[in-house]
Image (cartoon, rainbow, N blue to C red; front, side):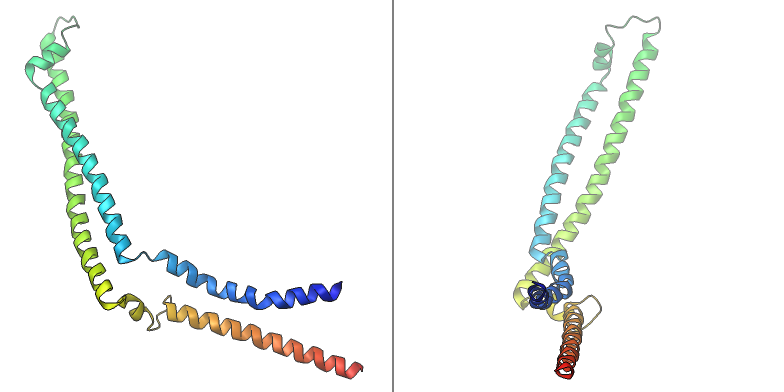
Length: 182
């Protein structure tokens, strides 16, 4: 029974070693979206930004309509007050503050839109270059910077070689001890 357990461990040792040392490659490959995926992500963000922008523009139109003097009077018609002018002025200030906040949000979205459009143009050019040249980033990454694919493969192969050498040394030691006993 004990020899079966040892054989099981020995047969799975190379698979385990390979999976341990190749795991960074898998994680690295999954972290890097392709240029085409990046273009799609930016386009989705632009669509989301457009919908938010449209809702804010609608809100500005509603606030403009509510800021008209006749609409302010109509909104306060049910309230009895000894100073209706103060109520109307307070309501106008409140609506003006809301409108200023919404216009500020629209300006922020406009800035985001311009940045996203610039990023989209860059990503589209990058995707075009990538498709025309056959993925030059991968070729550049093979140069050998820490974190590049070549570096990770080299470290993984050295690790597997080390495990193989340790395994061979253990096998030789065990074989030598068996010969001495016999």
